Length: 169
Ligand code: SF4
Image (cartoon, rainbow, N blue to C red; front, side, top):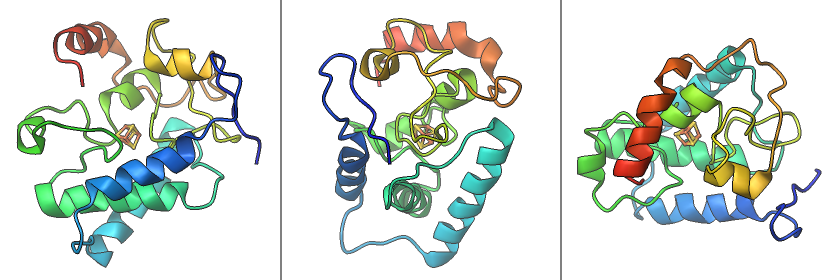
């Protein structure tokens, strides 16, 4: 698998393994998601890849880790809250649509910071992000191979940027 390089550090990107650790820490043992929920999330991921013209990450375990985290949140919160972020208060976060998979960044910019929805090489698409977005800083410009697909909320970019400034999360 080609290892993405960080334009800032020029070192191999360790984000896939960091994501697995982040998801692990979001799941509080001994609770594990129900198998039926895991299956449901897997189906959602396959279907959303088709809709958005993306692929799952080719690295072993990356997709499984994120799917487990999403299923865990679905079971415990009733919502597929993104498992790769820290929330001071998950119950409060539930009141917002921002990080419900597929999150606003995915539906507006086609950017998945969990690397669940990527291009064929396992890189997140950053082409549609604002220049100052963390994704651009980490990965540089990654072109969208299927610009005719996805971004169903592309008209909401202005609202998203306002929220990103006023409610950093
Ligand atoms: Fe998380 Fe958004 Fe990716 Fe879903 S689409 S896994 S919510 S970053």
